[in-house]
Image 1 (tube, rainbow, N blue to C red):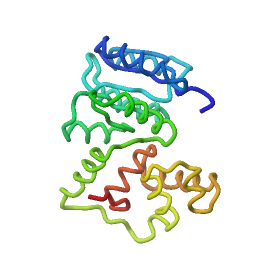
Image 2: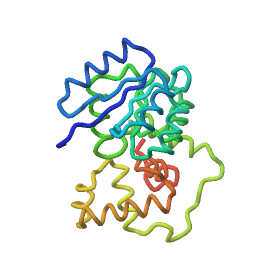
Image 3: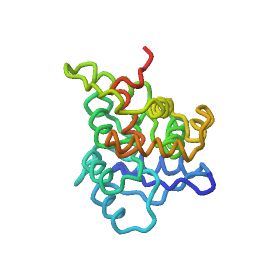
Image 4: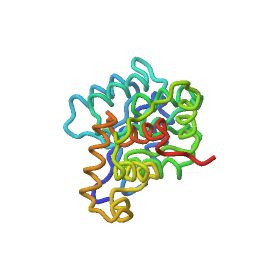
Length: 220
């Protein structure tokens, strides 16, 4: 990337926070522009600052305003900012809750430094990064429902479905354009149409929609 990915880290554990910052600042394409210890401080910065982050790495359990509630607010007010949950919680309910409120990725705190850096770069370039574990939890929430959503015929065009499936494979705009023999601008047009039709706020929402409507089928 030409410009560094700007990151804000929100976590109330100071020692953990400093360790993550030390790790990230060794990467030439990453820049930590702020560290905060609670959600209120985070929201206040976003509302006042002209220098918006690309990514916020957030813990779920924080004082004053926790990570889930903060993510709800950020997803609504600052939809361009991507959220990566980095937490010690990995139960299905926590994962589902964070994905539903807009998290672009979900990692446990025992993840490797390599996986954290990979996830940040994927979210920065493609808008989301869900592990197989998270994707199967999303799929499981649908499988357990008795009333699956049935799409009207023709709701999405054949081309839009092709684009959506490639998005779910974490293909970039350029890669989708090359595979479908269309221009990147056309890909973005289809992506925007998909966002409007599915009422998704971002690419991560499109992935969840595709899984829930069995447009993207995960391998076992």
